[in-house]
Length: 188
Image: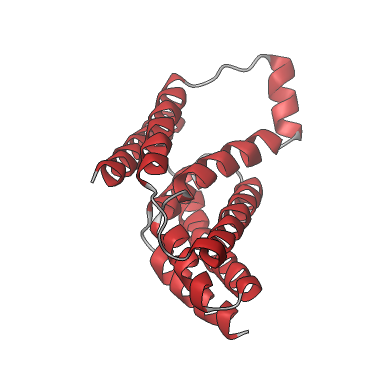
């Protein structure tokens, strides 16, 4: 229980203002919150499970430079894709209205890549070296999801007040910024 509480607190605070929280805000301006939260939760649970296992097996000595650079390049691709936009025919639009699987997948992949080598992942690895594995995994996952849920609320409010083109450009710029930060972190 102590591991869960410590991990929740550390990760919640570390996530405030982090790039993945800003991504949640950008996604929330465009999509419904439930598939976004599902994607965030799945990606976070997987990344933090890997982090806990790595922390237990190898300690805090994990080189993440290459992972950061590859994730940054992927974010540049997300930015280009966002700016290009997608055109849906009537049949595709009807299916998109009925399912949110594609949003869950897009959010999940984006968050998974963003969290690889991120400070919350490294904090979880470090916490796992000193605390219980299950408590650290549960606390860190819930802490991150809680912080990103706050961003969803703010993003939903912005999405109802901004035109779609502004949201698309803002999201693309966010992806470019996140990609640049990841590449810079990997090179540094």
